Length: 249
Ligand SMILES: Nc1ncnc2c1ncn2[C@@H]1O[C@H](COP(=O)(O)OP(=O)(O)OP(=O)(O)O)[C@@H](O)[C@H]1O
Image (cartoon, rainbow, N blue to C red; front, side, top):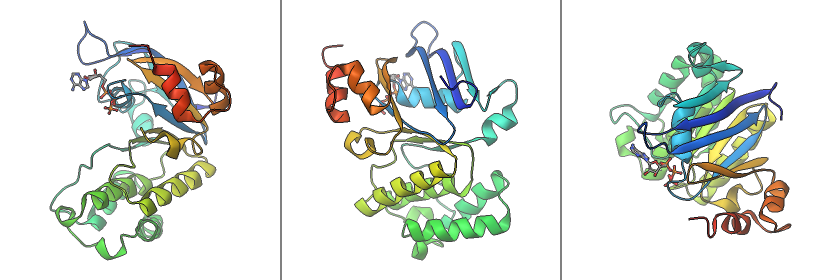
Protein backbone atom coordinates (compact mmCIF):
# COMPACT_ATOMS: atom_id res chain seq x y z
CA UNK A 1 0.00 0.00 0.00
CA UNK A 2 1.23 3.47 -1.01
CA UNK A 3 4.89 2.37 -0.86
CA UNK A 4 5.85 4.73 -3.69
CA UNK A 5 4.67 7.81 -1.87
CA UNK A 6 5.26 6.84 1.76
CA UNK A 7 7.10 9.49 3.73
CA UNK A 8 7.87 6.89 6.37
CA UNK A 9 8.22 3.25 5.40
CA UNK A 10 9.03 0.66 8.06
CA UNK A 11 9.49 -2.93 6.89
CA UNK A 12 10.10 -5.93 9.12
CA UNK A 13 11.62 -3.94 11.98
CA UNK A 14 13.07 -6.01 14.78
CA UNK A 15 14.70 -3.95 17.48
CA UNK A 16 15.19 -3.31 21.16
CA UNK A 17 17.66 -2.65 23.89
CA UNK A 18 19.52 -5.97 23.84
CA UNK A 19 20.16 -8.41 21.02
CA UNK A 20 18.80 -11.45 22.79
CA UNK A 21 15.56 -9.74 23.91
CA UNK A 22 14.00 -7.73 21.10
CA UNK A 23 11.16 -5.40 22.06
CA UNK A 24 9.85 -4.86 18.53
CA UNK A 25 8.95 -7.98 16.55
CA UNK A 26 8.67 -7.63 12.80
CA UNK A 27 6.93 -4.26 12.66
CA UNK A 28 5.80 -2.95 9.28
CA UNK A 29 3.78 0.17 8.57
CA UNK A 30 3.83 3.31 6.48
CA UNK A 31 2.86 6.93 6.80
CA UNK A 32 1.83 8.58 3.56
CA UNK A 33 2.17 12.19 2.49
CA UNK A 34 -0.40 14.42 4.24
CA UNK A 35 -1.47 11.63 6.58
CA UNK A 36 -1.89 11.69 10.34
CA UNK A 37 -1.36 8.24 11.79
CA UNK A 38 -2.01 7.31 15.43
CA UNK A 39 0.35 4.84 17.09
CA UNK A 40 -1.55 3.30 19.97
CA UNK A 41 -0.79 0.63 22.55
CA UNK A 42 -0.63 -0.09 26.27
CA UNK A 43 2.26 1.04 28.47
CA UNK A 44 5.32 -0.85 27.30
CA UNK A 45 3.81 -1.85 23.93
CA UNK A 46 6.80 -0.37 22.10
CA UNK A 47 5.58 3.03 20.86
CA UNK A 48 8.54 5.06 22.14
CA UNK A 49 10.98 2.34 21.10
CA UNK A 50 9.55 2.47 17.57
CA UNK A 51 9.97 6.26 17.57
CA UNK A 52 13.56 5.97 18.83
CA UNK A 53 14.34 3.67 15.90
CA UNK A 54 12.78 6.10 13.44
CA UNK A 55 14.79 8.95 14.93
CA UNK A 56 18.00 6.96 14.55
CA UNK A 57 18.62 6.83 18.30
CA UNK A 58 18.47 3.04 18.10
CA UNK A 59 19.59 0.72 15.30
CA UNK A 60 17.34 -1.98 13.85
CA UNK A 61 18.48 -5.53 14.52
CA UNK A 62 16.64 -6.42 11.34
CA UNK A 63 14.44 -4.66 8.83
CA UNK A 64 14.47 -1.27 7.14
CA UNK A 65 13.29 2.22 7.98
CA UNK A 66 13.04 4.69 5.12
CA UNK A 67 12.17 8.39 5.30
CA UNK A 68 11.34 9.88 1.91
CA UNK A 69 12.67 6.70 0.34
CA UNK A 70 16.09 6.88 2.01
CA UNK A 71 17.59 4.78 4.74
CA UNK A 72 19.57 6.73 7.31
CA UNK A 73 22.80 5.00 6.25
CA UNK A 74 22.20 6.05 2.63
CA UNK A 75 21.59 9.75 3.21
CA UNK A 76 21.60 10.94 6.82
CA UNK A 77 21.11 14.59 5.78
CA UNK A 78 17.89 13.96 3.84
CA UNK A 79 16.68 11.52 6.46
CA UNK A 80 17.14 13.76 9.50
CA UNK A 81 16.23 16.99 7.71
CA UNK A 82 12.83 15.47 6.94
CA UNK A 83 12.00 14.77 10.60
CA UNK A 84 11.00 16.77 13.65
CA UNK A 85 10.32 15.17 17.01
CA UNK A 86 8.18 16.19 19.97
CA UNK A 87 9.23 14.03 22.94
CA UNK A 88 6.93 12.83 25.67
CA UNK A 89 8.65 14.92 28.32
CA UNK A 90 10.05 18.36 27.59
CA UNK A 91 13.81 18.62 27.16
CA UNK A 92 14.76 22.29 27.35
CA UNK A 93 17.83 24.34 28.17
CA UNK A 94 17.17 26.02 31.53
CA UNK A 95 19.20 29.11 30.65
CA UNK A 96 17.53 29.76 27.31
CA UNK A 97 14.35 31.76 26.77
CA UNK A 98 11.39 30.48 24.78
CA UNK A 99 12.36 32.73 21.87
CA UNK A 100 15.95 31.46 21.95
CA UNK A 101 14.73 27.87 21.78
CA UNK A 102 12.67 28.68 18.70
CA UNK A 103 15.54 30.62 17.06
CA UNK A 104 17.97 27.81 17.78
CA UNK A 105 15.66 25.24 16.20
CA UNK A 106 14.93 27.45 13.19
CA UNK A 107 18.66 27.87 12.58
CA UNK A 108 19.29 24.13 12.90
CA UNK A 109 16.66 23.48 10.21
CA UNK A 110 17.80 26.37 7.99
CA UNK A 111 14.48 28.25 8.24
CA UNK A 112 14.91 31.75 6.80
CA UNK A 113 14.50 34.78 9.03
CA UNK A 114 11.18 36.02 7.70
CA UNK A 115 9.54 32.58 7.82
CA UNK A 116 10.92 32.11 11.30
CA UNK A 117 9.49 35.41 12.54
CA UNK A 118 6.07 34.81 11.02
CA UNK A 119 5.88 31.28 12.39
CA UNK A 120 7.18 32.18 15.85
CA UNK A 121 4.70 35.02 16.11
CA UNK A 122 1.79 32.85 15.00
CA UNK A 123 2.76 29.89 17.21
CA UNK A 124 3.12 32.12 20.25
CA UNK A 125 -0.43 33.39 19.64
CA UNK A 126 -1.92 29.98 18.91
CA UNK A 127 -0.38 28.48 22.04
CA UNK A 128 -1.01 31.61 24.14
CA UNK A 129 2.66 32.11 24.93
CA UNK A 130 3.13 35.74 23.76
CA UNK A 131 3.95 37.04 27.21
CA UNK A 132 6.38 34.19 27.91
CA UNK A 133 8.57 34.48 24.83
CA UNK A 134 11.40 36.11 26.78
CA UNK A 135 11.06 33.96 29.90
CA UNK A 136 13.72 31.42 30.76
CA UNK A 137 12.42 27.91 30.31
CA UNK A 138 13.16 27.15 33.95
CA UNK A 139 10.49 29.75 34.87
CA UNK A 140 7.73 28.03 32.88
CA UNK A 141 4.96 25.72 34.08
CA UNK A 142 5.00 22.08 32.98
CA UNK A 143 2.36 22.61 30.31
CA UNK A 144 4.20 25.69 29.03
CA UNK A 145 7.41 23.67 28.75
CA UNK A 146 5.51 21.11 26.69
CA UNK A 147 4.21 23.93 24.49
CA UNK A 148 7.79 25.10 23.83
CA UNK A 149 8.72 21.62 22.58
CA UNK A 150 5.69 21.62 20.30
CA UNK A 151 6.38 25.15 19.03
CA UNK A 152 10.01 24.21 18.31
CA UNK A 153 8.92 21.27 16.17
CA UNK A 154 6.42 23.45 14.29
CA UNK A 155 8.84 26.29 13.61
CA UNK A 156 10.54 23.92 11.19
CA UNK A 157 8.53 22.52 8.29
CA UNK A 158 9.86 18.99 7.89
CA UNK A 159 7.99 16.34 5.90
CA UNK A 160 7.32 14.18 8.93
CA UNK A 161 6.52 15.00 12.54
CA UNK A 162 7.04 12.31 15.16
CA UNK A 163 4.96 13.29 18.17
CA UNK A 164 5.07 11.21 21.35
CA UNK A 165 2.08 11.62 23.71
CA UNK A 166 1.85 15.41 23.38
CA UNK A 167 -1.36 16.13 25.27
CA UNK A 168 -0.27 15.41 28.83
CA UNK A 169 0.08 18.63 30.77
CA UNK A 170 -1.68 20.74 28.13
CA UNK A 171 -4.81 22.61 29.15
CA UNK A 172 -8.01 22.09 27.09
CA UNK A 173 -7.30 25.14 24.94
CA UNK A 174 -3.75 23.92 24.34
CA UNK A 175 -5.02 20.49 23.28
CA UNK A 176 -7.50 22.02 20.85
CA UNK A 177 -4.86 24.39 19.44
CA UNK A 178 -2.47 21.50 18.93
CA UNK A 179 -5.08 19.37 17.19
CA UNK A 180 -6.16 22.25 14.94
CA UNK A 181 -2.56 23.06 14.10
CA UNK A 182 -1.81 19.44 13.22
CA UNK A 183 -4.80 19.40 10.88
CA UNK A 184 -3.49 22.56 9.22
CA UNK A 185 -0.02 20.99 8.77
CA UNK A 186 -1.56 17.85 7.37
CA UNK A 187 -3.66 19.81 4.92
CA UNK A 188 -0.45 21.54 3.87
CA UNK A 189 0.98 18.10 3.01
CA UNK A 190 2.96 17.28 6.17
CA UNK A 191 2.80 13.80 7.65
CA UNK A 192 2.37 13.09 11.33
CA UNK A 193 3.00 9.98 13.40
CA UNK A 194 1.37 10.59 16.77
CA UNK A 195 1.32 8.37 19.83
CA UNK A 196 -1.31 8.89 22.50
CA UNK A 197 -3.32 7.08 25.13
CA UNK A 198 -6.16 9.61 24.81
CA UNK A 199 -7.99 7.58 22.21
CA UNK A 200 -11.19 9.59 22.29
CA UNK A 201 -9.17 12.73 21.47
CA UNK A 202 -7.29 11.32 18.49
CA UNK A 203 -10.10 9.14 17.15
CA UNK A 204 -11.53 11.83 14.89
CA UNK A 205 -8.22 13.39 13.88
CA UNK A 206 -6.08 10.49 12.68
CA UNK A 207 -6.56 9.08 9.19
CA UNK A 208 -5.26 5.69 10.25
CA UNK A 209 -4.11 3.86 13.36
CA UNK A 210 -1.37 1.33 14.13
CA UNK A 211 -2.23 -0.84 17.13
CA UNK A 212 0.91 -2.13 18.86
CA UNK A 213 0.74 -4.85 21.46
CA UNK A 214 3.80 -6.41 23.08
CA UNK A 215 5.96 -5.14 20.27
CA UNK A 216 3.76 -6.46 17.46
CA UNK A 217 1.32 -4.71 15.14
CA UNK A 218 -1.98 -6.42 15.93
CA UNK A 219 -4.20 -4.21 13.76
CA UNK A 220 -3.82 -1.24 11.44
CA UNK A 221 -5.88 0.91 9.15
CA UNK A 222 -8.73 3.39 9.26
CA UNK A 223 -11.23 3.34 12.12
CA UNK A 224 -13.46 1.18 9.89
CA UNK A 225 -10.57 -1.20 9.16
CA UNK A 226 -9.74 -1.50 12.86
CA UNK A 227 -13.43 -2.08 13.66
CA UNK A 228 -13.54 -4.86 11.06
CA UNK A 229 -10.34 -6.41 12.47
CA UNK A 230 -11.83 -6.26 15.97
CA UNK A 231 -15.12 -7.65 14.66
CA UNK A 232 -17.02 -4.71 16.23
CA UNK A 233 -18.21 -2.33 13.49
CA UNK A 234 -19.38 1.10 14.55
CA UNK A 235 -17.74 1.17 17.98
CA UNK A 236 -15.48 3.98 19.19
CA UNK A 237 -11.71 3.50 19.02
CA UNK A 238 -11.37 2.99 22.77
CA UNK A 239 -13.79 0.04 22.67
CA UNK A 240 -12.09 -1.42 19.62
CA UNK A 241 -8.71 -1.11 21.27
CA UNK A 242 -10.00 -2.78 24.42
CA UNK A 243 -11.47 -5.64 22.35
CA UNK A 244 -8.21 -6.11 20.46
CA UNK A 245 -5.84 -6.22 23.44
CA UNK A 246 -8.12 -7.97 25.90
CA UNK A 247 -7.03 -11.50 26.69
CA UNK A 248 -3.85 -11.28 24.62
CA UNK A 249 -1.42 -11.15 27.58
N1 LIG B 1 16.01 2.13 28.07
C1 LIG B 1 15.46 0.91 28.10
N2 LIG B 1 16.19 -0.19 28.37
C2 LIG B 1 15.64 -1.43 28.37
N3 LIG B 1 14.33 -1.67 28.11
C3 LIG B 1 13.57 -0.61 27.84
C4 LIG B 1 14.07 0.73 27.82
N4 LIG B 1 13.05 1.57 27.50
C5 LIG B 1 11.96 0.78 27.35
N5 LIG B 1 12.27 -0.52 27.55
C6 LIG B 1 11.35 -1.65 27.43
O1 LIG B 1 10.85 -1.71 26.10
C7 LIG B 1 9.47 -2.07 26.10
C8 LIG B 1 8.69 -1.04 25.29
O2 LIG B 1 8.78 0.22 25.95
P1 LIG B 1 8.33 1.59 25.28
O3 LIG B 1 8.92 2.70 26.10
O4 LIG B 1 8.65 1.55 23.83
O5 LIG B 1 6.76 1.50 25.48
P2 LIG B 1 5.61 2.57 25.14
O6 LIG B 1 4.64 1.87 24.25
O7 LIG B 1 6.21 3.82 24.65
O8 LIG B 1 4.95 2.74 26.58
P3 LIG B 1 4.29 4.02 27.35
O9 LIG B 1 2.87 4.08 26.88
O10 LIG B 1 4.37 3.61 28.77
O11 LIG B 1 5.12 5.23 27.02
C9 LIG B 1 9.04 -2.21 27.55
O12 LIG B 1 9.07 -3.57 27.88
C10 LIG B 1 10.12 -1.47 28.31
O13 LIG B 1 10.33 -2.06 29.57
